[in-house]
Length: 160
Image (cartoon, rainbow, N blue to C red; front, side):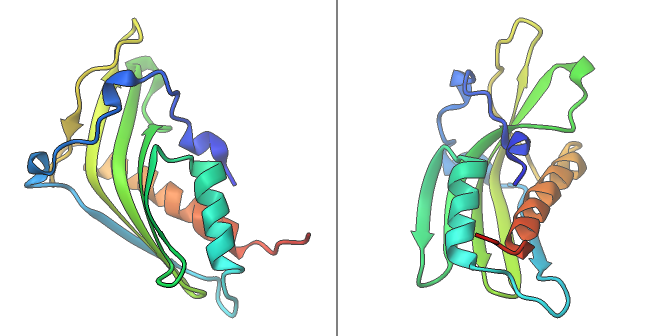
């Protein structure tokens, strides 16, 4: 599990509030899925996903954790690992719903906001990401890394 990917550097107080849903009328929504490796299944899906979420991702808030439906929903703010350091720092805040089965992981990312940190370490105001925005492709790559990380973690055999 790559915990560094989910670095959020908790000194970003300006980003603590979850934005009002009205801000997201033309919201970018990213839906991704990954299948278990061919001829295999994901292992111990609920407890391992729960562990990945709580210990690796460390969300700001878990909105739903449903063992019967195998669904998780959470809010996370993380530093964009692909943003050029020469440009400063960019943080991505989002809501995600995660549906799991032995054969597939599906994640939906919504309510996506960006925060830019200046050279003095001050975090700017939230910028909701609209569908078709310039940053969409870069953000999608970050979300691809998140779901790939979970799928990889669930694919590993737990030898305890």
